[in-house]
Amino acid sequence: MMTETVTTPRVWLGCLSCHNAGRLVGEWVDAEDAAVSVDDPDWCRAVHGPATAAGEPVSDHEEWWVMDHEGLPISGECSPMEATRWADWLSEVVEWQRGAVMAWLSEGSYSTDTDGMPILSDFDEAYCGEWDSFREYAEDLAGSCGYLPSTNDVEANPLLRYIDWEAWTRDLACDYSTAPAPAGGVYVFRSY
Image (tube, rainbow, N blue to C red; front, side, top):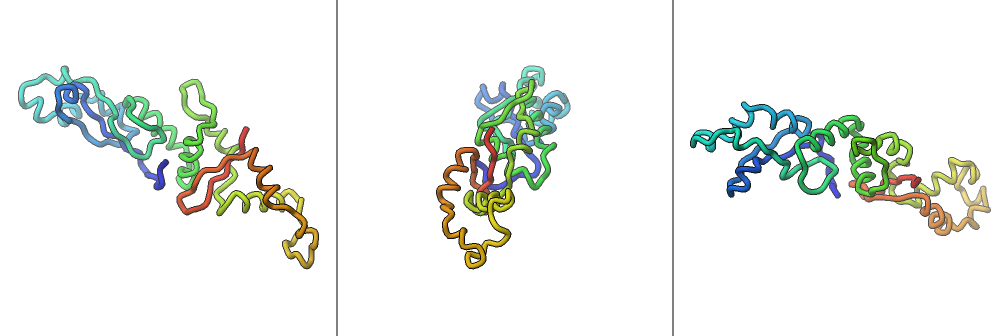
């Protein structure tokens, strides 16, 4: 899982023909431009500079593949079109929530639309925020639901002594999942 959120997802587009011939020919581009770049003959010629100078026609080098990437919530290689779809999808996520979205995706409990992309409204329903611990979230939830008196002062509310916070947190955790947050706390997600 990523510990740092990359603002602009990028991919390394490599020529498959050159790769199969033992040459590493490619270039880093913004992921949102991946599908457009490989369809641009001028871009392809520029990346292939030495190969085309040697007389090889660019038409022999039309297959491109994303061989590396940063800032995309996928593992391994993918097609330029898939990289562009992920970049477009991520552009709909507000910047400050990208870390939480990446963690949610790595948890793997999300629904997809007809294009195979996660449904972002599911994230909005599941995300409960970033907390120092799940117990802190559980205590806050108990208070916001009105289960606790208005003050956490044990002297003013002696019943607080009898609350088994570990049992409450353990039982509540069955309906939630957590993922590590970069600042050392956890992201909390409601399970469906």
